[in-house]
Structures are given as C-alpha cells and as structure tokens.
Length: 393
Image (cartoon, rainbow, N blue to C red; front, side, top):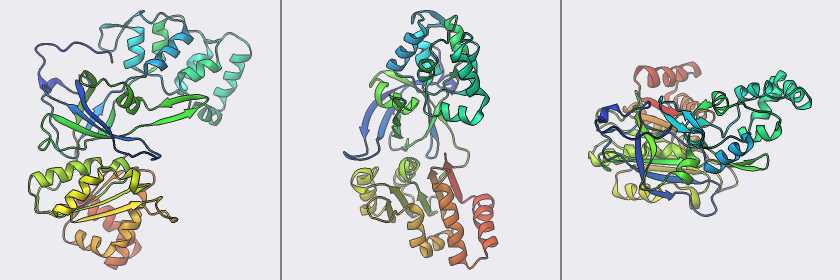
C-alpha cells in the first residue's frame, strides 16, 4: 500500500488494518550480543496523534516494504520504467517503483507467479523446462523454497510481461506481520515496543531477508512516519481480571515479548499475584533478551521465579520444558491454587513440547491416568477454566 497523505479530518478511530497509522521509529537497539547466531532487536514506535490504545496481550500489525535494491533488480529484469503511473490499492495513483516497494510481495516466489510465467515464455527449451516443473508438484515446492521473484526471472529470462500492470496482477499484495506487543501502555504512554527477530539468509547466490523484519531493521526511517501500523486486539491472551492471581509465563526467544508487557503492567498496578517466568534461548552471554530487566524485577521481588534454559551453554541441550519438569511439583501446586499459565512462541515444536510436558506433570504430580491428564490439560485448564492460554505461531 502506497503512502497517502493524512486527511485533516481523520478520526483516530479510523486507524485499522485497512487504514493504518504511519508511526515513527524513535528507538532501535540490538538485544542479542556480539557473537550471537541471532539478530534480535527492540523497536520503539511513537503513537502520538493516533488515538491507538492496547493492553498487554495485543499485537501490532506492521506493513513491511521491500528493500530498494530488490525492487531495482526486479525493475532492471523487466525493463519497465520505474516512474510508470500505476493505480494503487486505494484507488489512487502511484508509480511502479513505489507500488513494488510497498504494495506487493516480491521477496518470495509462489505458484501463482510460476504459472503466470509459463504463458509468457516463447515456445522452446525454457518453456518446456518450466512446464515440466509445474507438472511435478513436489519439485515445484522445492524450487519455490528460498527463491524470490528475481531468482525466477533470472532462471527464465525469456519471460516477458507486456505492461507493468500485467506484472503487478500476478503479485500477491503485502499483508501485515503481527508482532506481540512488548510494552505496557500504562508504563510507556504514546509508545509501542516490539521484540523482533531479524530474518536474514543466503540462497541461490543472493542475500535475502524477511519482508517486515528486514524493513524495520534496514529501511524504516527513524523519526519519520514511515511504518504503517494498527493494533490487533487479542480475544483471549489476557492477564487475569483479578490482579491477585498468580501467573506462569513460558516464552523462549521472541516469545518473551508479551511477558515483558505483562510484568510491566503488573508492577505498575501493584498486583499482588506472583509472577513466574520461564525463558529459553541459545546462550546466556549473547541471547538473554531483556536480561537486565528480568534480573532487576527478580531482585525487586516482582518476579518470584526466573527459570532460564540456555540450550547451547552445556553439552546436553536444555529447553523450557526441561525447566518445567525440574519444577514440576511447584508448578503443579501453582496451577492447583488457580494460577494462569501462558505460552508464547513457536507452535510447531516448543508449544507442542510444553503441552506434552504439562500432561506429564499432571500424571506425575496429580496422580491422573494418561487420559485423565490429557483431559485436564486440554479440557479443564485450556477450555473450561481458560487458565492455559497460548499465543503461538
């Protein structure tokens, strides 16, 4: 989506996914230290004048932009005039370079693009090769993996689009990336904080990066309204309504984000409920995200338990589920006393492992049968009492 001037009569209530607020990056720092295998960063965005509000557990929708160098490569390959006028997604007009930068995904190839190219290649070896690829679904999936539109056009240079609009019609519109908000609005008025893992990789002889994380790290202009955002409220991932309730937070990696907001809010409200954080990453020396803050909260008595799982700091890998198992008796006790348990982060492995560990703890500490333990965790805790809440992706 191309940048449009703000209407003078705009009401804050109008800011949404379809009409995002253009925010400023006012602070940007790297959370991971030198030598880390990851690049995780903390961003602070200014929301003044937006009227946007949020509570801990909400997410911020961020629209990323393609890197100028990637867009230039694509323009060079197509041979189109970058200043060619284009009707944009709002019904107004922009130019091709701007549309390719803000409105469409070009950093990842997809099946639609591949199919569109086949009919735009003259009869011959290249067209036959692409047709064979399209006919083999598994081979096509392997081909698409790690390639962007520039890679594909380089592989099939005979492909030609007649007009810029024809090119754009084959591209997928940019969609927002949702980031768990890492701040309390009570503590940071008119600001929103994000904890973002910057995605960078090399494939097919070219350096690549994630659309939104790469935009925030490399191309979001500080102190200029260059980042389109909106608030995506959570329906369920919320602090207990009773501030006296204990909470257990399990968040490895960037899954720590909402729990920073949770603890900030609980401290600001002087909540009497106990706070227990279980955090995991690779190395304590380089990957202890917000480490000084957590240690400060612990020393203040605001973080009753801080269990850390740095998987690569010893020969045997230790993950958050291992820390849960080590503290199984106390964790079970907290749950029996009404504590809420939150999980944020990777859905494929971490969340599954945490879930299975909870069932195991219910069996061992609660004396439940395998079926009874599963019913308690998946049914009673998660569905009936809604004290087991997850924000996984």
